[in-house]
Length: 162
Image (cartoon, rainbow, N blue to C red; front, side, top):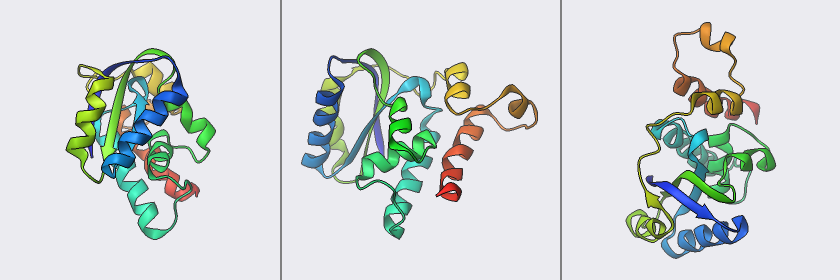
């Protein structure tokens, strides 16, 4: 898995997704974009990719498309419609775009044209993450786990909920 991160400007979400799909098809990669506000660091995405790939290897995937399966795991949700909230909306947004499998370096070269690059993975939006992943203050107070750990737990729990 490789990522490119920074600011994207999306005037039409469907057209943006088609561009991502075209890059993925050209390079044999699963390509997915995320609103950076809902990404709890690189380990969050690596965990989602690992679980999605394992689901495909075992024939336990929910989505037909590996990029969508990655989105489901990253969002910790079984319903695609709910997971799409983690995607990139119209307008200007800090985003993380990942490519997994195939010719990842070539895919990232193409994806860089869509992004005004700057770091986003290290800047956690804790209120947005806690809200999106339904992590309460009480849950956070009851454990020594970090918010990132709790988000990754939500990713792993998706296997149990299938």
